[in-house]
Amino acid sequence: MRKKLAFLLGTRPEVIKLAPLIAAGGCDDAFDVTVISSGQHDEMLRQALTVFGIEPAYDLALMTREQTLTDITVRVLRGLEPLLARIAPDLLIVQGDTTTAFAGALAAFYQKIPVAHVEAGLRTWQRDLPFPEEMNRAMIASLAELHFAPTPGARENLLACGVAPEKIFVTGNTVIDALLSVDGGEEASSLLASVPEGAPVVLATAHRREHHGPPLEEIARAIRRIVETHPE
Image (cartoon, rainbow, N blue to C red; front, side, top):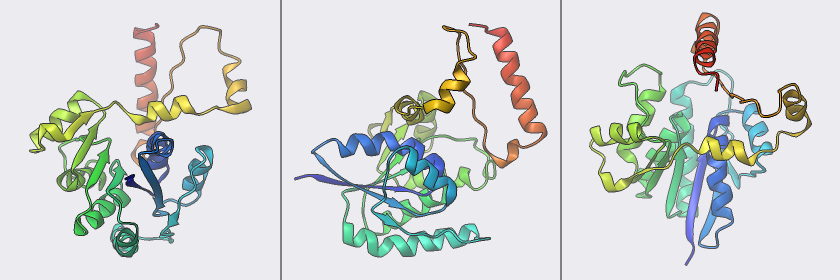
């Protein structure tokens, strides 16, 4: 009998990092895959879904102007309650540290549906840094049955939180799989045309609101120092 996997996503990063797993599950006859969108992001979410060819079976469409974290949490809980009861998945898979992921894990817990957490174990050990993500991922860890950690360090963090070793799997970060699966098209080709053949290419991204202005400038300076120190 096929196992029913439900993937919950609502933001662009979640789409990017869950896309390889959704694709792999969809190609495996052992699984019946359902994708649920919370709609926490709107335009950016649609762009990412299009890039990876993902069409959610269900959309909670919770995006509204000036919504609070409480609004998002309540709407995800209310939207998922009847949906999870109808789908009855064997496993709900969430990614990262968004409010969608936390509320989804909580909704599944209330219905005794096991939760798998992708990119588990990241910690700053500072409750409000970043806010609310640090507490979101800590609470997801307390709700999840399976923890897919991107690094050995993330595994150690989970062990420090009391997670059983047999429930932790060090997998690497699925963003690498997502990057390798995407054809950048003509725009990417034109950008890379100016790079000498065989030259190393470094990809760096920074998207958090705290990185605007001086913090972003410091990130750029740090990258430059790294490149100058390690030209290879």
